[in-house]
Image: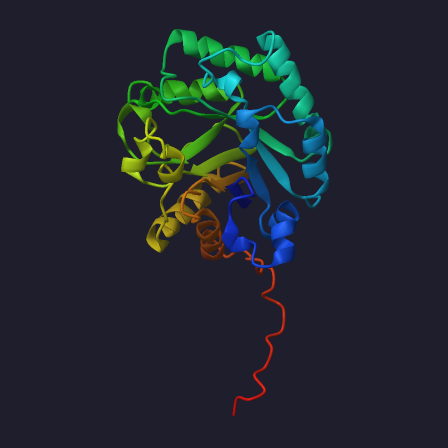
Length: 287
């Protein structure tokens, strides 16, 4: 089964086509897509109250992919807002507990930074993290090319299978060592995650620019690119029970439109946007 969604639910204006929809964004979103990536958790471990609210505002078959807190992936170069790593992981596990108990947590996504390269130290770190997360399904995404160089590719995939890491397959700009190629491989029989970051090479390299958040994911996939991905997804689906696709090309508001187009290409039902079922008012003076 292939399930398609977006990163976050707040920034996709093209799907909130009525005032009511804009007021109840997550409820509206849950009627259009089957999953969402909660990227707000990356910036701060969310309160139990928020997690409970989001859990109850979505349909019973809706599932969340939670992005790991930045202190857990090494993005935080300063002091983490916890007394220790043990406290940080305990807070994170407590936060996701509501979704886990409601069977709405699909996976926690660990996306590592471009400087997290393929070394013995970092392999040991991945083992430690996986042990800390215990029974929580965890997906792994690299941003350093060394993990998938020809000499390391199969070793990396074998390690992921042994340590129970779900593969997060990426479509992203090929911009040197700080990016990874499309690696069409499954490491878990139950789940594979695909993240669509766009192909804006210039924007991908703009991390030190003041407007990098506005341009990094500025990209709209064309129909041919989506058709190519549809074929990849069908191949991945033969190896993994479920494939979750998350569009992260949000900078220009393209993610929702691309996701809905891919759903149509795959022959899936594409729910109507809010207001599309409302009858159009006839022009009484039209002859």
